[in-house]
Image (cartoon, rainbow, N blue to C red):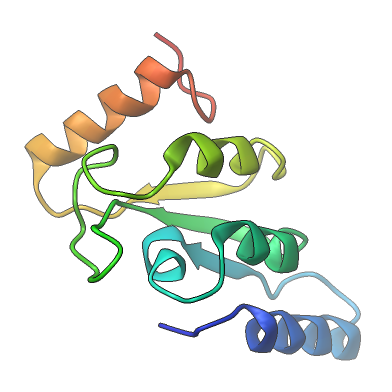
Amino acid sequence: MFDDSPGLLGKLIRTCQSETGGDRIQACLDVAHASLSSTPLDLWFDELSPFIGHLHLNDNDQSADLHQTIGQGKIDFAKVFGRMKELPDKTSALIEISDLAKTEQSVLYIKKGGYYGFTQ
């Protein structure tokens, strides 16, 4: 859940896919968890993008998993959303915030930026 790098998860998925001959095993990339590691987010996407089937999205202050409103913390979501656009259209995403008002603010942030299939 709080791996310091994506290597082990990538290796596990590659092994499972090669042994089963299919792609039913996929990764859920929690962007906020990955941002807390010492590995840059770009490297998480580089390693796992062939396997990402789902994403969890929320912001943080880069020191704790705070589940903040997207755009209110220190995660570079312009970069994250750019990388998300490289993923297959079927990739799902969850705004992982338990407060409805903060979730709505996050959706507005995403729409304003024209990110990930949301339009104004």
